[in-house]
Image 1 (cartoon, each protein chain N blue to C red):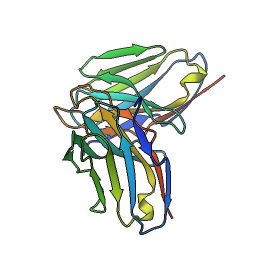
Image 2 (tube, each protein chain N blue to C red):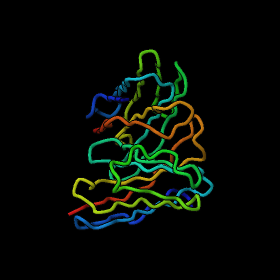
Image 3 (cartoon, rainbow over the protein chains, first blue to last red):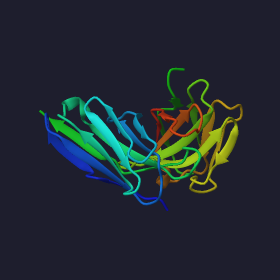
Length: 113
Length: 115
């Protein structure tokens, strides 16, 4: 059974600081997804990582994938309040299509002034 | 429509009643998914369709749960004889295809409460 573990589960940080969220998974996969969820809202796709060494950046967020270590990271640079949300990573557990994602428990990020 | 639409937004029902949750995917999206999200957890896969064909229902918890997408567009998730443990947020998602790297677009969900 595929397991996806995120840490930390709760992260409180000050504006302007940097931090990294980690996503470990238990089986071979080369497709990993990051989603953002605001309170009471739906999930919004942030990044799709499809190969070992893939790196994607948008704004203050950068995601990377190391398939050999079965690890993805979501790095936050110079955090701002608007980044406060829950961040989920998800791993595709089947080859050939992406329909069966296994999600981590999420990291609740709070950015304080 | 502009996004994935789900109805009702909230559903409160008594134990033992049947409920039907509706999902209207993004127009033209071939693939449709149902996930369930408990409070403080990530979404959990339930079932998935390509067009009208249900390709995988391995995530449905038991035979009280069923889903259909008869015309390859709108889908209904039905829970018969609801139990309190069925209470959760039920989310629908769609994607253009199930090709590698396709993004899933999630709806706002139906919050089901079984009393």
